[in-house]
Length: 277
Image 1 (cartoon, rainbow, N blue to C red):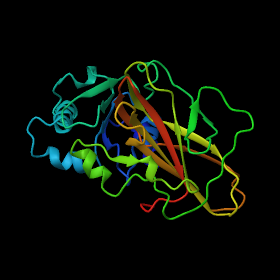
Image 2: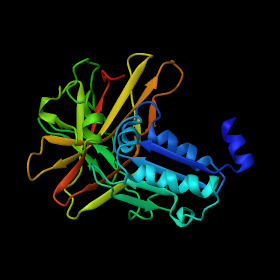
Image 3: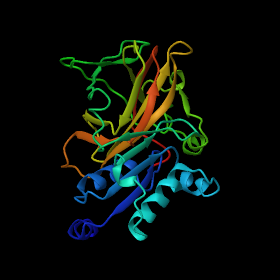
């Protein structure tokens, strides 16, 4: 395989991926990067969709992506000590933004630099309320949603282009169809947090069909403005096309690096249909 070839020859590799890339998904790029055994590797994760930040960056002489790429090529093709090998191996753009703010990490495991991982559990929703994101499991919890082609929650059709331009994609939770979607919200943050990494989810389901899919969205909610509107942070999905694959959906979301301000909360949306897939 290519991975074995790179590891055998210890090939220097410079990788660039984008948070909303639905072709070469950033979470898969992270998995590939982690399996590379060469110490000579470098990963950029940028705001935007497939190849768009790199294409736009060609016209900016001070572009962060191409600036790092040139340092890498000069280092390994011309033998010039550009200093890039002394930099942390992982650079993640802090979005949504058009500036060149990148946070640097020594590995794709960003938990140590971010104060550790946080695990949330789903909590039951009451009538006319959202479910909760709890720090401890709720015994006996379950909830029911149905397949619908109009669930109301979505990652949109244009959100990737919007985010490349520095604007988040917003979703109005009140427009969601309650029988076909569910929203879970965390406690309101008392301090500003920077969330960088690759979130994951584990959802136990009781499907009525052999073939099913689960779609997940994570939002940033500014409760000081509107508790029913979320700014999309990341998305993912899980597909089950065989009757004997079990009833557990485990999946990684797209990698993300965003600041969630004090007074905001995190929301997770779950649906069974997304028109993008």
